[in-house]
Amino acid sequence: MADVKLTHVKKIYSNNVEVLSDINLDIKQGEFIVFVGPSGCGKSTLLRMISGLEEISAGTLEIDGEVVNDTPPALRGIAMVFQSYALYPHMTVYDNMAFSLQIAKVKKADIDQQVRKAADMLQLTPYLDRLPKALSGGQRQRVAIGRAIVRRPKVFLFDEPLSNLDAALRVATRMEIANLKDSMPDSTMIYVTHDQVEAMTLADRIVLLSGGNIEQVGSPLELYEHP
Ligand code: ADP
Ligand code: ADP
Image (cartoon, rainbow, N blue to C red):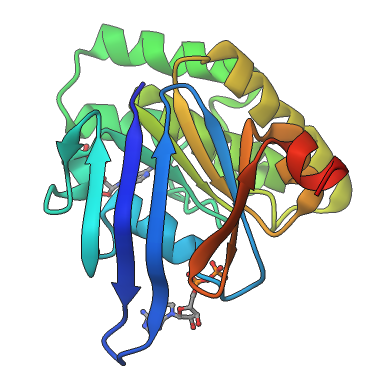
């Protein structure tokens, strides 16, 4: 539930390669933004800078009007869903979702409520007692999404969350994410993909990155039907 603003954001890696030159973008609370562009254009770098996993070389990142360039990841109110689900293999689905709240010393009853609500939203209730290895790839990715939801982040980041899934699961999980967007309309979602169909079906606005800069910004209709 937050605005995210990027002003003159630049990224130069330690090998002096400038990956992003001058990114300017105003993301409104509740927007679903999809970054697209060829492999290596810096989509993932941008997402990692927003999450705080990667340092911003120059420019400012604001969340809700506050500059967070130097704010540690855990304090930014952001949750990220990765391409590889990164679930804890020895923990059940329930515990995978509950873990960050347990660490944060949230009351057991509140954890239970949050986990069951997320499980219900993602149709994971029948699987709460299973280990990740007993789930399909799509179900695992839903657990990863559930783990993000229970943290009640202001901003969700998705880094190619469907890329590891086969075609059928990709469609199903994409629909789950579309449902998520509908059931959490106040949450800001920033999504990276190289898949045009994902961009068109999920985005309020698509941001096309190229050569270290934003090449185009617009609704799916504006970008793909009247480019
Ligand atoms: P995308 O997500 O669009 O595929 P990335 O953000 O992963 O692009 O990478 C953008 C560019 O930055 C690539 O050329 C990549 O090789 C380079 N890069 C990514 N991470 C690092 C790093 N830690 N150090 C140096 N270069 C990196
Ligand atoms: P905390 O409860 O303090 O956030 P965690 O153990 O949940 O601690 O997270 C440790 C680090 O990993 C933090 O920097 C946090 O932001 C990051 N982190 C954990 N889970 C996620 C996630 N789903 N998306 C993005 N970052 C995460």
